[in-house]
Length: 460
Image (tube, rainbow, N blue to C red; front, side):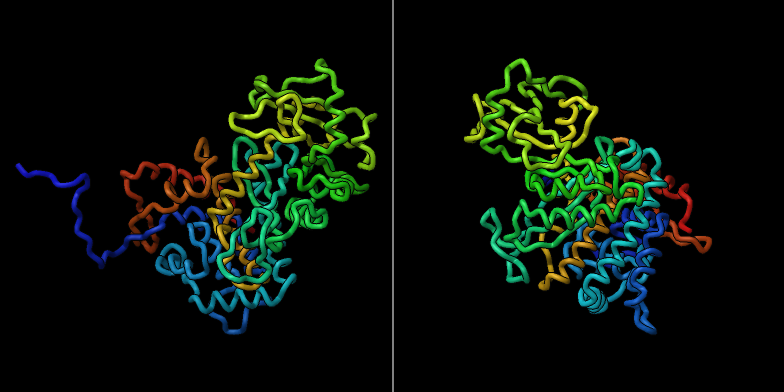
């Protein structure tokens, strides 16, 4: 009888293995790119930057970097993981070629950004049509969340500055389309800003909203079917007036700071006027109430016509410190909206669900936004576009191919369970086959997802 030493088996490690593909689950993203025509759209958009007799197509090079970021990379050199697997990802450009393309796109300025964004918008509309009832606009309304992100810098980079949290880095403003409770979300705007950029800058919110609207299908770029949601950073008169301007008529739900006028108005509200807040399942939210301040209060003076101001009071969670603007030991928050015909409890629940934008930011940090790897701001703006393409793929692939709880998996879990799975590459009958391990717990999820992608019509 042999005595076992340790908790794990002893395995001898050797090199020289053949026909084994690491990151084989990345074929899900590759098939998604092929089926939605993203490779063709990006390639056509970047045609002006393709040099004569060039071996590598600029669109393929940019997509390769985005795929590397989607698989967990956080710098340009991580495209090497794709270069090592040509059987799945095809020929991949060298690191110098990737760097030269990025420099060329950064040097082109707005022209390159416009080309990339136009291609993404074109493909997005096609993806939503393919998704059908799973598309973000299936319910008739599209919700866009705008929020700022603090990205730390650990070296001197252009426009890096001290942030309001006493850190050092950048403060980009992002926009995400909310997929609702049955999905995740996808990025539609990224505005690179210095670290000391303000949170309540109306001009930046307007630019971010314009970028986000340009990514939506044309029939969602104006009208009440599109809802812009922000925290109190968007609660400025200039931004709200822009959203509700004649000819634009967007719906909005923006957070508002508790001013002294709002605080005094809340103190005058009788107890009978408060309505219990609700949960997503329709149940009453314990310890939370909402009320709408009427038009006769001074709180709405100077704001656009049709704006409604809704206040929520709630028992603070244990350990929370009350603010001067709170009342009677209850935390006060408020938001403004121009939506009519709905109960204020439902409107408050809709605004509270803006917290899902924090999930999107967490996913972005895990997908290339943990830091900006380049020095110049123009280069890092291109990097933000690459990050958005990677996030698009990580949102579109589950939308088109996954079902059930897998549809809700964030990038970290997708990589751990699906994308990082290894497989054996077999060539037979002039066709390549990837054989995933039968004992891998999520092999069925991978194969079923590939089958769903195969049933989609090809681009063109």
